[in-house]
Every structure is written in structure tokens, then in C-alpha cells.
Image (cartoon, rainbow, N blue to C red; front, top):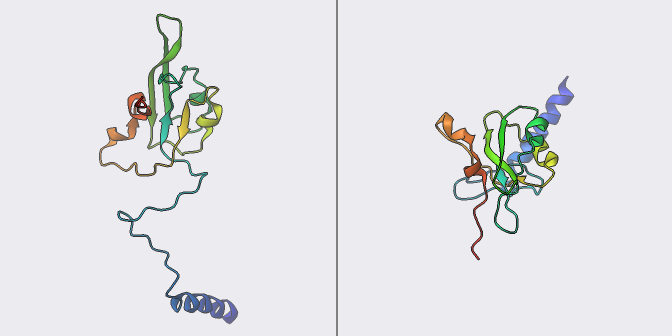
Length: 138
């Protein structure tokens, strides 16, 4: 019974007298170093012609275990299928990455962006326009 107590006190005291090991990050001024495998905010990617890649197949919505993706597809005048409505409810998303793996055209990507806090509920409903990566300047 005394052995675990002494072991715990040893760990506490060894950390107390080590002033060079800083574990606190001054958040707004300093950013955390993100792992390459981190899964953050979703992004809709564009192809080389700056058109959105999504073909509205619905596989991402079917693969999502939390059922937070809503997608509706239409065909344009050329017969090309695209998403008319693509919404992700971020309060329900568990950032598992299944939508990214299920996409056959690699249209959705989970970025390194982790600052997605908001004060209003409707801000957590991300539409296609908010998720689409901006066009490149040529």
C-alpha cells in the first residue's frame, strides 16, 4: 500500500524540480505542432481546371458513422453530375476520416485546421461554399 504512494510522490517530485521541461503552450500567440495524420476541418478540393471534384455519388454520406453529411446531386446541361447541396454538421462529426477514404475522386480532404469553435449553432453547419477550397490565382 505504501509502495504505490512512494512511486507516485517520486514522479511528482521529479517533475516539480525539472524547470526546463515546458508543456504549456501560450495558445493564441503560439500554435501547436500538428501531427501529419491529424484530421481537422473538411475541405472540398478542386481539379486542375478549378472546378469542384465532387460528383455527388453519396458514398461519403453512406460511409459516415455519425450521419452528419447531407448531399443532393444534380446534372448540369453537359450531363456532368455535381453536388447541388453538400452540408456537414460539425457538431455531429467525429472526424473519423471515413468520408475521405470512401470518396472515389478524392474530392474531400480533412485538413490540419482545428480552430472551428463558434458561439452560434448555425455556424457549425458547413455548406459546400464554406468547404470549397478557394480558386487558384493564375
